[in-house]
Length: 299
Image 1 (cartoon, helix red, strand yellow):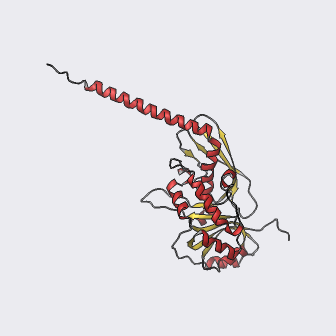
Image 2 (cartoon, one colour):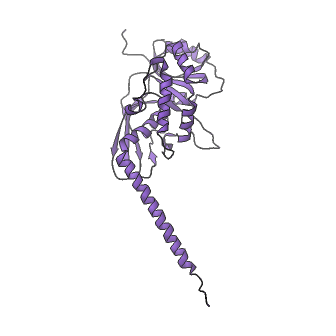
């Protein structure tokens, strides 16, 4: 009885066809799922995930407003409107576009991280370093104490919410729109991956629908702010592409679970109030980013 040898060329062609069909079906289902995401949950999820991520990674900008716009099938756009965070009068609002495509990749070329003096101040926050505050004392003492300032207050040791609430009560800090919390300093290890931006959180970073569950009570705001930050991180998906903002899910998740505050980004505070903080041993230093006269004050 003769047994025919298999036609290996035919078998190979069939296998290639099966693999090609499987790959095509996978891409089709992925695209369909992405289309449903774009058109059924576009504005809400774009604002919740990418709009907030842009604010977290860019504390050097005030970005209070955003708007989604579904365009071509392969793209949708979320536009943030804001201005650089300066101590003086605003310089006019700019548009910052976030564009995720059909396959989940996000482009945000002008929102990849903070820049300028405030960006440098945020990036300079490093735990377990010995930094003196003598120079900044002399700088502040040599300036009019009524100047407005944008600055970073770096703590000597990371604070829990409980310690920060006690700190706020001692210094009568109310929190709010002019105080942001640094939950993680920036990170870079050339042996293990790309640089990650600092995680900086403020109660105005999420949409109104996200923060409506939380009541802010002046000095105790750090507790509610941390709860809000954890809620936002809990709504992220590990597949969300946050690389355009130099963030990733693991980095944010760890910061949320630890809940430590490494410093504050303060917006338009008086120099006199910043100078008082330098006398507290829990403050390592204050990094001034910008100062300006408050032209709205009465002479």
